[in-house]
Length: 165
Image (cartoon, rainbow, N blue to C red):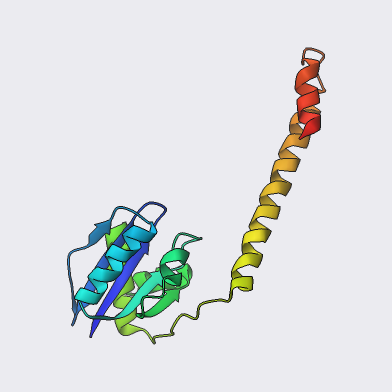
């Protein structure tokens, strides 16, 4: 059975394909974009990969996971991946090593297929993240306004600008 581990970051995806108990050299896909995903998925199909393991890395893994490529996919919790790496005594951390660990995870751990959330379940966290960012920005602006009002040397137009935000 051929398995794959993919370490996804903001700009790249690193793929390691495992055949039997051996792993191939890591291959880095320079673009974490739909075009880069298509290239990566084609590579998985050519290698006849039957299971793919991704680590849930913020939002970076989501588009690749949502791409309906017809592959058996599992998305693992980062803590589970870390504990697995510790259990197999992996001490070094890099994209290539993480991808290799994820390939081993796909081979040796019980496979739990990833279920695509519905559109509403994807939209709600996105809205919550935006609300949290706006609240943080509001607090930051209030703090800046408070600090600028503490001195008489602050130009009035700066205070007016902060009051508008």
